[in-house]
Amino acid sequence: MRTVSDVDVHLDLKGLKCPLPVLKTRKAMAPLKTGARLRVEATDPMSVIDIPHFCQEAGHRLLSQERDGEVAVFLLEKG
Image 1: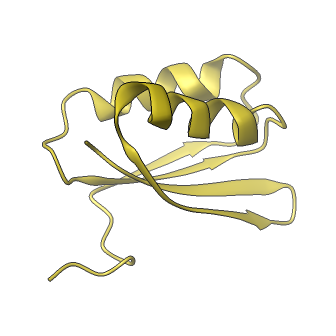
Image 2: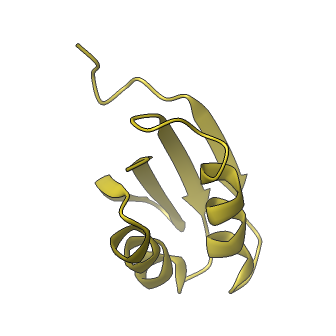
Image 3: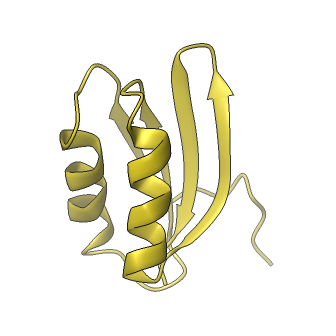
């Protein structure tokens, strides 16, 4: 059984502006197998809207979304 701390890929997108965080997230998810987990860190304020929307539209699961200061941290699971 996997835990939330199991991450297959870590994506550091701090400092990138919209639309780059969601585009790079999409590109990183593409080669992953179903069930693989991706941790994304982004500072762009729009990422808190764009990344959850991307997950919903693409059929991926948003396992968690947190704030660490200015950094939004997402844990995604490929659907």
